[in-house]
Length: 207
Image: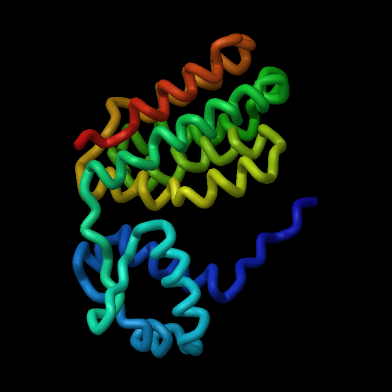
């Protein structure tokens, strides 16, 4: 039985702020007040400060002396920068995961099923959640903790959501593209790494 995932207070605060940015509660250029978040969540300012520091590393927010912390006004070029790095990581992950996923893609299949429904309903939030869920399971199947940690550090879910929300970056069919990857894994396609890399690069916003 898989133990439940326990998130630290800092991680919970980080997710709260990320959700606020992705949902549009805090818009590009808008100030995020550390003290106000601490009061709202009934926590001290220390874990809030730590969470904001993490998000600055992800380039989602920026701080300046006497100006406080603000949501970065990200451009298509800013969002696009992470995709070649992500594509390279996922190419490696696909190649490492190929033997395992060639036998069993059950970790990926529920996300594709959900994407068919999300595509039908044009549910952008579900498209983001299950697209990222699919790729996370693929990276996890590689069985390399360093690779997974590095991939997670790119803030894939946030940047995918922002690409759609701020730039209108959409794909014709999220489900069909991901079903094609499952088919390639099950067929033991020797070019699976290149297919995954091309798939990720094809999702990048264009400046």
